Image (cartoon, rainbow, N blue to C red; front, side, top):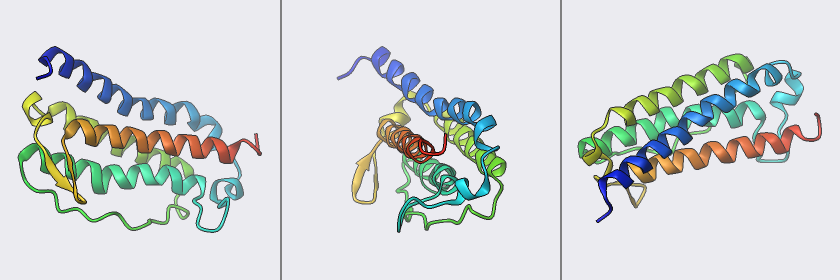
Length: 159
């Protein structure tokens, strides 16, 4: 059994990682919103995603997967969540996309912060795998990190 102080530290670290996405988006915002639409909407390869779509995926997954799954796991209800369909973020301004990312991430963090420590240890099945709030928060943080890495790769040739 892991001591409760270690689990508390783990919760804090995961929540900090999730909030780091908000910090990264806000730090990048002044640069990103000034880029030409052609750069923001360009797909790097067949089947690839544009910068708008990459950032939008954070909002989509937070809103349609991580937040409802977190609620279901925390309450003991089996989360019946489908993988989100690809949403076209191309029609939105980059400022709106980034605003939605921040809003969706803060909603997720708010939900997780409100859960009691014992809720974090409860498991639920999501897409054939057992998850608790620790693993769900970790997956959300990994998804965000992957998006930031891919955006950086796409921006490298134009900066």
